[in-house]
Image 1 (cartoon, rainbow, N blue to C red):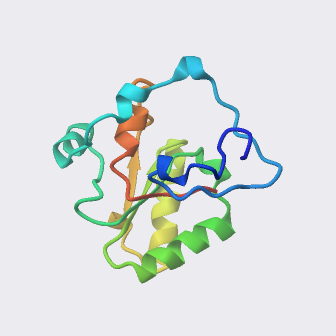
Image 2 (image 1 turned 90 degrees about the horizontal axis):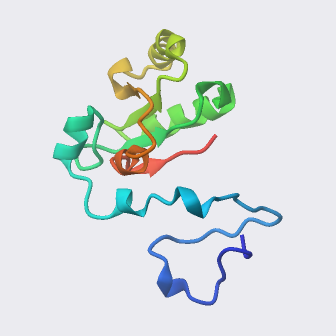
Length: 140
C-alpha cells in the first residue's frame, strides 16, 4: 500500500512491489525479526530443520491454516505443479488430519504424493528464517 511504501525509490527494494488499492497490512514493529533474515539460509540449514530447499528443486510454499485452502486454489496450484516437473508443494500440518486427504488429492490429480511436503509449525523466533528455503510463497 502507498501508506507504507511509495513508488519514489524503487532502488530500495530487491522485490517488485505490487500496490494494492484500499489495502493496508497491519504490522507491529515490536515483533521485528530482522536477525532471522540476515545471512543466507543454506541447504544445511534446511536439513537441520527437515525442510526442502530451493537449491534442490522448485519449492512452492504456503504457511496458512489448511482450512483457508479452497478447492479452486488447490486446483490452481496443482496445475502449476504439473507444468513445473519436480516441483514440490510445502504446507504446514495444520491441522495434521489433513495429510491423508491432501495425499489422496495429489494421487487423484496424477501428482506423486512425495511432491507434497508437510511440516510442523515453527517457533516464532525461527519461522521467518526457515521459510526462506522456499522458492515461491503462495497465498490463498
